[in-house]
Every structure is written in C-alpha cells, then in structure tokens.
Length: 191
Image (tube, rainbow, N blue to C red; front, top):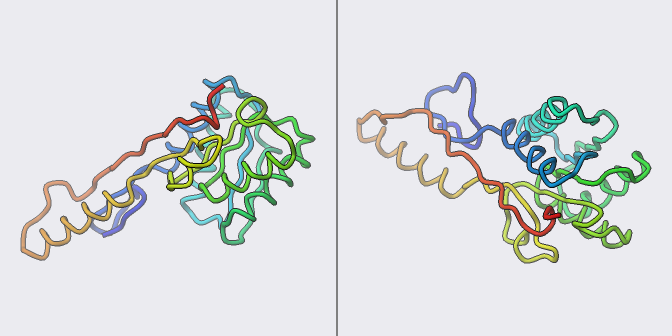
C-alpha cells in the first residue's frame, strides 16, 4: 500500500492525489484572484514538494507568466521560522515585486504570513498567501489562510479498509484510488 500521492507505477495498491495538479490548481486560483507575479517557497524538497513546484511552474508557463526568479527553496526541514526566512529571501531576491506566494505547506505559509506582517505587507491586499495540508492553524490565524486540504485521515482509513479486505482474501474493486484535494479558499487570497 502506497499512500499520499498517485504513482505512475505503484507496487500494488495506491491511494493519494496528484501533487502536480494541486500545485497547478493553486496557481490557477491565484491568477483568478488577479495575481500575476507569484512566488514559490519550499522546504525539505522531497518528491511531493517537487511535484507541487512543477505544477506551479507549469501553470505559470501556460499562463505566460514569469517564475524563474520567483522560487526559494531549502533542503532544511520545514518550520514556521524557515517559512519567514524564505519569505524574506524571496522578497529580497525579487525586489518585492511579487503579489502572491504559494508555500509548499502550512508551516511555511504561516511563517510567510507572520513575516509579511512584520514587513508591513498587507495580506491579502498587497500579497496573497496560500499553504498546503490545511492544518488547524490555517483557519484560526488572521487573516485566515487559504490552503489545500488533502484528506490525510480519510486516506488512512481507506488504506486500512483495503488492507483488511486484502488480508481477508478479497481483492479490492479498485486498487488505485485518487482521493483528490480541495483548495480551501480563505481570506489570505481573497482580493
């Protein structure tokens, strides 16, 4: 059982969603909000984060928008502090021309949000921020954080059900299940 991402060649059973498409759809949402200079912040840079970043790049390419100098990443583990540091670096590298940032997870997005407040950048008026994983904090910060809900609990339940079914000698009807995702649109990207 492989979970959390859709794989081209799973070993057997696979439950997840397309990180690439989620990244693409986040950028599409930001473009629809009127953003045109969208940055990306990533940490740890595991394959899932890289897929989100590829979706980000592809959406901007399709829209004819720049992205080449709008990416800041680190191999370090993700944290709110790292998100703030990466946001500062991204703003310095781009001379502050960005009007949105897609962060690879909510910790990074919270760091970017807090750092934008310290820098007197109004969110969402001057800067839209979107995270990923839709953690509890995303709902309660001010402004509330737009984030990608990925149903980790539901994936775990479905994986357990399929494993129990297999252990009981039954073959699941679908061995590959795309659980999808949902962009929870909140104040941090409403313009």
